[in-house]
Length: 135
Image 1 (tube, rainbow, N blue to C red):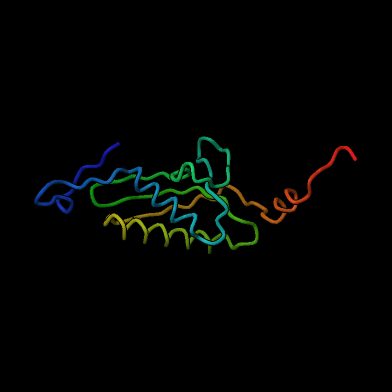
Image 2 (cartoon, one colour; image 1 turned 120 degrees about the vertical axis):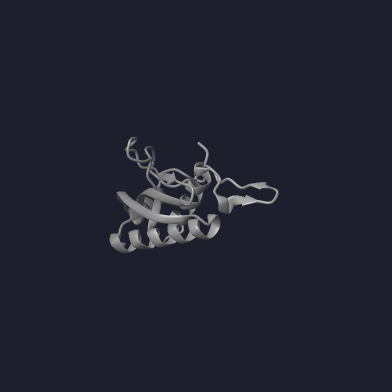
């Protein structure tokens, strides 16, 4: 997938192009920086939620990029106990700010899809208690 250079991206010595995958990574990183986000969801088609790993930083992110604008969809998993609308609003603000600052594109919308809520304390308690089958 490639983007067409805009007049803004043409310089005296060449053109500057930003691949949509770069914008996906920026959006993914901006999303997981938000307090209350446990991870990214695999997306709409997969339906399998996984906690964030550093392997695929664009996981759960879909972007549409034009010559001057971008629209972003992020699929997230939220930690239990957080106010979902507040976390989603903060994700929208952070993603928009990050993309606009780093790329110069105008972000026209950031859609947040909450796919799951995870109980962090319960998971850690289970991991802390080793199970012994034989004494």
